[in-house]
Image (cartoon, rainbow, N blue to C red):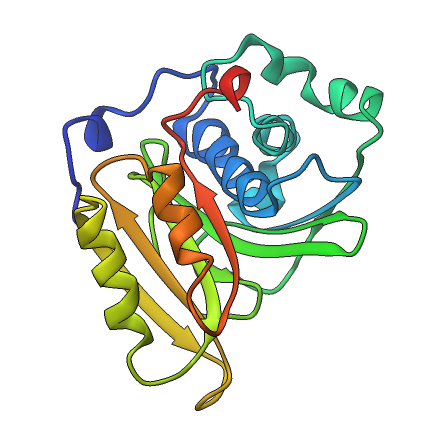
Amino acid sequence: MRFKDVFSIIGPSMIGPSSSHTAGAVRLGRCARQALGLVPEEAIIRFYGSFADTYMGHGTDMAITAGIMDYDTDDDRIRNSIQLAAEQGIAISFQSELRPGPHPNTAAILLRKGERTVRMTGCSIGGGNIELVGVNGFDVKFTAIYPTLLIYHRDRSGILAEITDIAKHYGINISYMEVDRKARNGEALTVIESDQPFKPEAVARLKLLPDFQEISVIDLTSREETR
């Protein structure tokens, strides 16, 4: 991974003990929560590798639950997140997987709210940094360091040009972009990271595109209280 700023090296403001096992886990949970866009009714977390071996001792279970509650890495409520989630009616379960993941610190998160479901797999790669490696069956990679859009749509000629034209019109500077599709002319996911938060009117315009299906905004720079 290429570090994008000094904070990628020194790590975030955080509740300890470990930037990888707590701060990174919080961010993984927040990405899944924001991708769902709702307070989930159920959360199933599968830990792999070092996460699976040490998640209770290092507080990774509390950290990832805090992220699912959309708390930030320095939120004092992290320590009580599992209890707070239960009080909000969120059913959370943790599972340890014996088979290796793509990284020693990997978590697969399943969130449900009614008929809406998000499946996200990500890795905590050090210093509180993360890399998402899968979303809802799509093989996409992104870091969520910057505000991120997940745009679900049908694969067709010209749709990426239409997406980037809208980004240009609203002054969105795309810093990273990746696309995966399940089949030619089938379901596709475009991931866009931007240098600035996405304007609501830009998101609304994207929703009007032909063959658009769904959009999620992930912005880890936002605070839980303002969401």
